Length: 372
Image (cartoon, rainbow, N blue to C red; front, side, top):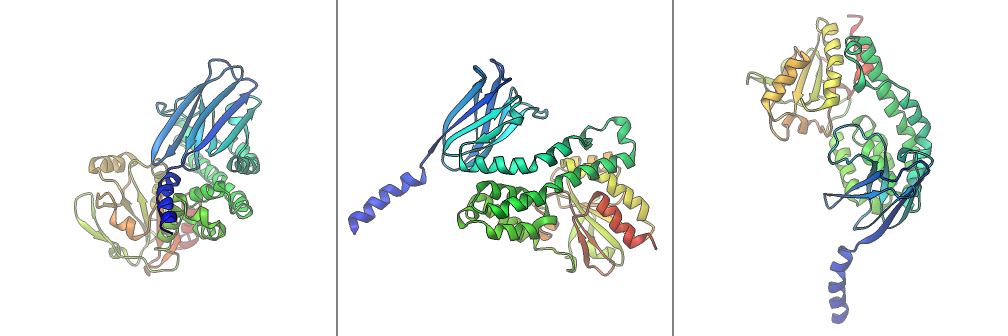
């Protein structure tokens, strides 16, 4: 018995740090000699990078990983040093085995196969492809011209279409996850969708179906954290009181706005989607500010000057609050894990909507206040 224990003690560290070998081979009919493929993925919170030159229409990577992880491949752009959009890239699940990518033209149009996760990813990608093609035909809200940005109706419509196209993929992903409860691809899809509190109930149901092994992975723990955070505040409960300072250092209580409809908006100066949503919030504020409605913004900024500059640049006239702490106490109280986020509170202090933006926000306020 003692000898068995000693053997176990010596074997355990080896298993803990065991590495699995992988190879990635890519073939493209239009790849040119001199093209360069970059591979990036994380292990133990470290970014691992590698590169391979195209030769005779193919590239090759070899390495080892301690645990499976999703990475990505880029052609002729080193993601470490580019600030531009990656024009030709492809996700790859780095895991033990031989991974094959075949492409008729660009890296982005590759068909991947060879290992369990990559075979599953190919199935999910095929199911989502029609929606991806539909999304490509939409105008990108981030690429509107200066003249187009002056057209509020166009901006709102463009954002609404982009958001609708994004959420249109969710039912397809949930369907895949429920059919593949043992797939690492399912876990990562849920991890991404869990960032939208709007779908946390569906995320929780699908997560319950996953294998015990997947649930115990770091991404599984993160999904659980988001689900538990999301349950801190739900539609129908009374809004939780908080006090934060305004831009002049004066303390303001949420309860000071009782008897009004109030949109509590969580944002930050560095958050692109938040800044993109600000014109929509400004529009509804101006439309309904005389109808017993107001906005209270909570910034999770820690740099006061950047916070104040963003308020000025976006021309936000309502009360702005922040404690300028690394973990904003009001955001923590409300279980905020991603921004932009918001809650709509009625005059009785009850939360009647959560995370409504764009067209949904305008429709909800019209329903409540247009007749007043």
